[in-house]
Image (cartoon, rainbow, N blue to C red):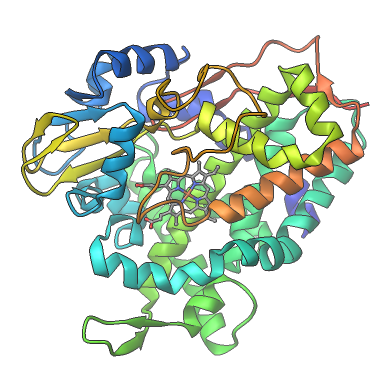
Length: 428
Ligand code: HEM
């Protein structure tokens, strides 16, 4: 198993590269977006217009939704918070109109609303609660994978933690956590990304990717139905879905597959990028790095602060289900509402000196995992991964610091996903 975690496989470089992610999505944004987010937020909490257009980006997504819609964008903390929480009016069913989502994990909880979402999310929720993340996930997968990665770093004097550490941990945790062999992690993720990517893969390649996914997941579900183990698929095979009339039934293969694909896609890239952002934030603020190394109670605030300061996914979209008014702006029914949580997270009405990274801030809720009914299902697992990883790094490499001879890395990507180009360090 440890071979898969540290394999010298060129696909790592190809699949965990924020520059390539940007190019594949059709719009690489190398510049920091926070300045523009801030000026939009300060001119109005809610603007007519798609976020993409307000940011002055090329219109690569004109046919993103099945039917044409007007766009609105939300920037203040209060308005983002209100829109995320009111999932009846600002509905996630927009995902049903997105071809890339439907091709990859159509039918997952991400696109559901109301009671249907609550009942379906309840089949997964027990596996992702905080105590489960800190025991089951940690003891079964996170600790071992971190240990293997740290052992392999011990052979190096310098490293790119983004590639050698941050990318490998979450991909292996979610793949093995589902119940799949770690050896299949890269193959499975590559196939999912081929299906998802707008500019990636010919129709033939997409068909091949779809077959790989159906075979790997289908075989796993069949094996666990015959003989349950200790993993997410086994948990889903054993659980019952409550129906509208109060009766229950087992989940279908299709339901299990859709949510497992969502978990692997949502859990791999996000934690990779956020862990890299957190580590680079610390490495670039030597006083705070020293404080966190000396007092490990600050590791969790350091992670929360990075999720506030530079959340890897700075916006999510909803569709309005009725004529409504958000912070004084009338939004007609059937409009797309781009909720820019990256701007909300730096709202000066909620945080003092919001553009600064500061691990000593009082803990008040941010929107890095969103909020409301669709708040990230995997946030406890993700935080457990990042906490174990950062603590292990500081335990084994107390001198870890920026590599002064490496090219300066940058935070970039596309509008939906941002991360570090590298996290170059000296380890000894
Ligand atoms: C730093 C890492 C992560 C970030 C920043 C993040 C962020 C988010 C956000 C903002 C949402 C809300 C999407 C929406 O409202 O449309 C979300 C949903 C979700 N996330 Fe995460 N996520 C992370 C890690 C993970 C991990 C590790 C997993 C699984 C192990 C995961 C699984 C999910 C799932 C299943 C949903 C859908 C929840 C629902 O629709 O009810 N995420 N995530």
